Length: 557
Image (cartoon, rainbow, N blue to C red; front, side, top):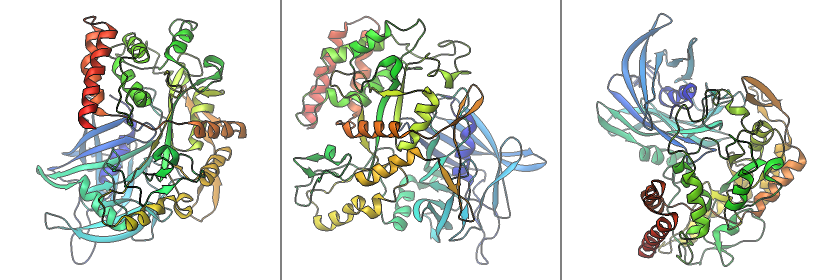
């Protein structure tokens, strides 16, 4: 895929940031991480584009000399492509360094103790981590390893394990994205999926989850999917009182069957001056607009046939599979219209797809009307500033994905919990889950939008303020949001009150939950090539997809 190549130092930090080579106590020698024979599998999740994940294989590959210093060399291979990056890492006196292309830069000091605060490399000055706890554990290989529980605002966010790596910390950067980047999100999360020494599996994602759970008291979910949920029998369900933003979407007959601590919104945006002032449209509307646009204008940017169908199912899956009734609707004209548009897109993208200067002027494509629509994944109202005032530079419509249902946007839970009807202690389970809905929890959310409307409104109002960070002396210092375009940094004023009011009203109007089923998507992927190659008509393929998906749903209800 070749994206975010200058961000791999962040991934490096996720692996090596924990390590040092010195004695950490009088009783035992510290276990370094960067040794021959060690390897990791790393999962990276884009928090603003949650379907965008990358796996990396990371291995120690001997020595390399930089700045007259002998360092260890890490090889990073992206599984979704052929990207190969090599980075130099150096350890001395309990401090780990990596070579950033200019100098050996310290990333972490293993002498940190409980109560220490540090500002990690690759993160803006507004971000810092606290060492909330320190302990020693014994792993399956019989070795004692130091751990550091880290977080922000006294809330555990991750855990470092000596000689192994990190779990559960959001990685953020304020630097400009490279011109060749496909996305413009600034926030990523990296997870070690597995750690091996000489090919022997010693630590897994589940081990990290269990370890962090001991210090947070929260059962960690499997990534990137949420917990599997089961309906309760209603005996401990809660009645929605109208003071929540999105809980009603997770309720039935006025009873809350799912607990969601926070949520995010996904929609499609475009300039009001081009798409009009509206919050829904159809494929026919989009086709009509396309006929008026200058030649060479694209609707969704770098979109292939397959990526369009995946995006369509993200936004419109619930339009074609009714979870309540079990009825599928893939032989509808709505779906056929989407198939026909997908056929107009390239099968795959190449360097020649958009021309020589496309990536050099990537960030200006929306301002200059070369691309009309952009996906918007919103976890915080303040993040809207970058997309609206930065990428588009004028007022936008939250128009959503084109579909006949009238709602091409959706709300999705960042986490989703429920109580099994077979639980022997429903009251106790509810007492635990209800904490997520309390003022104490909702008022302190650091990621995602609160479901309690009072705190959602407060978070939204922060979008009209300049961002700030807390300095080491505890004082508050404001700074400006910025947007990079054509190599220049553009200062962004905060959102206006009118912009905030508009997005709040839009969020409150969304009446669709996220629905996606991998098996249904596989059926679509298997049948669509017959239409693309002309072997079958759109109607014939749609009928086959309808029959297969309906059979699948009937067999699995």
